[in-house]
Length: 430
Image 1 (cartoon, one colour):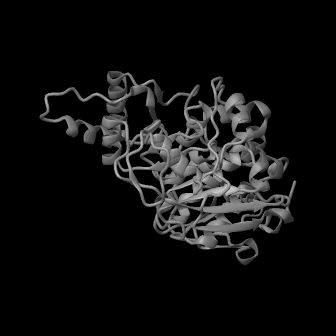
Image 2 (cartoon, rainbow, N blue to C red):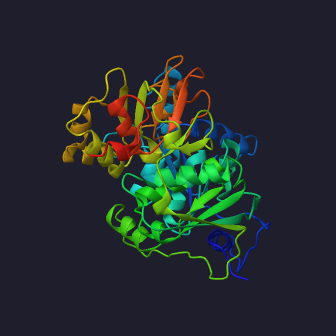
Image 3 (cartoon, one colour):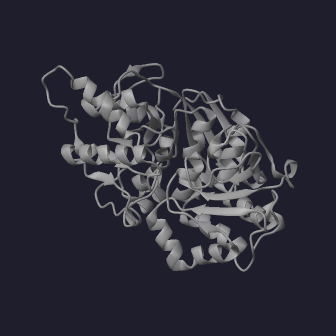
């Protein structure tokens, strides 16, 4: 019997010739990522070594990445103190994959890992963030852990008690229509599967629409796979994967593609015609509360947000600029732009994209997660409504349980910024 991508990755990571769904394994970790919540991991990690007489030393500092992104610049003395604690730990342990609050190498963790070539096809990647699933876009098995589990990874270099998951095969053929994006695809899929429809499973993406999709779009669909409950979302590595790693991340060593066997067994197969997709909207307060845009057109908006680890890449900003160039954001509606990394920010600045957006009335924010999370830089007021390209719209998201968040693609967000209400981008265009 053939194996899926995740089965092959876990077989390699456990030095076994084969594994099957339901096996409990302890895979070796290729990369362990944390952001500011590394402060919690440090506490748990030091407890492991307490009273042993042993030095609290990580298993392999070259395989740990820590990126400051959730609360930058620090919004409180508590955050600043935790960041200082992490800096001291990084220096003591010799961790080199550390991205501090810097304009030359900073950004959101789920963008930094691909940009710097930290993730490769076939890797086992774990992170103390639920959207670690993003890195399945590069053909890795990437999933989120809690602080205690990560502390064990730091000590042992492997994940304990992982049950080999079954896989759902999603085949997307055809071509996207004008102003239809990977975000519309993943919102449609989440609505179809529901928030628990892929629980403890891997979504494996295939089809001509996926083959033609750039890594930026693959990051979007892998990122949001977990909103359907998936442990991971994986796009098997191909020429596009290798092109991205060579040109964007500067990878020069061998890249090994992990592909499913022709007779791999899937729990189910879902087929989607990309040409039939229309703009999708996730309505408050659940990501699977999805409907075609015509069912929500005209909803009044106070805030538009374009950015995040889901849709803060250069092509996302370019799409928004194409719609907004030479026009103005509607009065009474504020628009926030936060690119996924400083590399993207600078490219958008150099190309004039950020100027186009600013001239339209958008407010440009530093790369980071603050607005999406609602901890600073863009919280909603009571009764306010936001339309965002972020990945979650739970009650209390964007900092206020009395606010409402709708989710959409960059094109839909930009078109809606012009009118101040949810607007189909196909009716506005460029």
